[in-house]
Image (cartoon, rainbow, N blue to C red; front, side, top):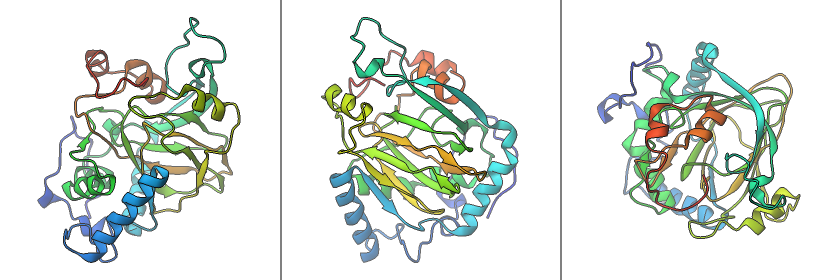
Length: 299
């Protein structure tokens, strides 16, 4: 398993021949590389059904433990690159709009305290980069979603970051700028850190502001709660499902890898979103800010 190496000057993709996927994923239990294997077909069917019903699929112990340990060690080596931020945000990561009534969800601002190791800081031989670059993984996720084709995200900061949350950190209700997010828990906190989500609360044709306002106001009826364990994989429709992470309790950091995928390979986060969450906006965020998007949703 390749662990060491300097940062790549620019992101570059691994070829299939360079990725020892069997060292990352338990292919005996989850033979995702074998398109005809009954276990793969059953797993895809289960994930698809779960995604249709709840907007989320959960595969316990998907990653090998030595791969999880390698990811934990990478985070330790990259500690100097953790970008911490604390502010108030709305669910869309947009600025306030005083042309709207105060009760509009775009004007509902919540505190956020979180930190990321941005994707452009990953080590050249990063296990997370290898996972993300695997065509086998992309094909498997596409089959689970029932969406094809899906693409790796062009956003250089947000395509596959680590979230590193400390005691008191929390991520309030929000929608993602990308279509689909994979969460791989690397290290669980002593308490808190639960993933809460409201499946398919909006869709590409309807923002459902009333439904969003209800959840922001305390309605728990649409809320699902998922507690992950290290090595678990979660596949989630983050652009359409409102979601949050509850405050971290205890001194142990919650570390989670977030490989993200899209149906539009050209799109990236808008500049305000990039600055707010990842601490900076790069030229690509401004260049593509006004690009035509696959949907008309607020970011």
